[in-house]
Structures are given as C-alpha cells and as structure tokens.
Length: 80
Image 1 (cartoon, rainbow, N blue to C red):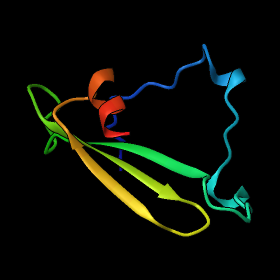
Image 2 (image 1 turned 180 degrees about the vertical axis):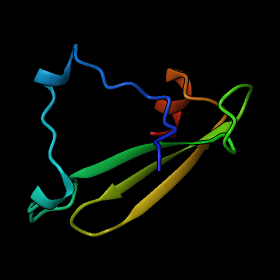
Image 3 (image 1 turned 180 degrees about the horizontal axis):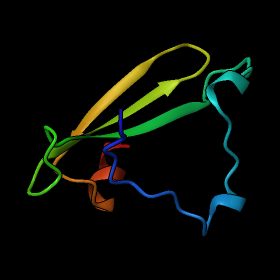
Image 4 (image 1 turned 60 degrees about the horizontal axis):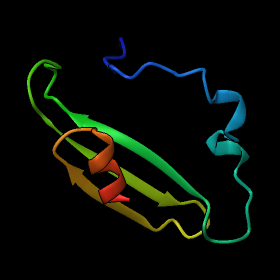
C-alpha cells in the first residue's frame, strides 16, 4: 500500500529536537506525549478538509483529540 501523506519530513530543526520511536519509550512519569496530526481528506487531498490533533500520554495512555479546520499554526496552538 502506498502512503498518501502530504507531510514532508523537515530537516531544519531535526537535529535540535529529541525524538524517539514508540519502542524506546520507557519513561516512568506522566508528561511525555506523542502527537499526531491526521488529515480527513477522504482520499482527495485537494480542497478543504478537517484535521484531528491526537495527543497521547506515553505513561498513562491518556489520549485527547481536537478537531481543527486546517493545519494552520493558529489552530494547532489553539488545540494544544
């Protein structure tokens, strides 16, 4: 299956932001989150469609989801 994501990996800040894969999470305290921005384009990336920001706490498994009208910075900051 071919990935349909329109998100391109950035390199500008990659060296300055600590990131780990899911198997490396061994934190024993709440407050370490994994975030994901999901586009609901129905398979058609052109035009307007909504996004959901998913935030999951690694230790507790607590998850929160916020819908957004698009992925503009103002809506992401508001959702956070």
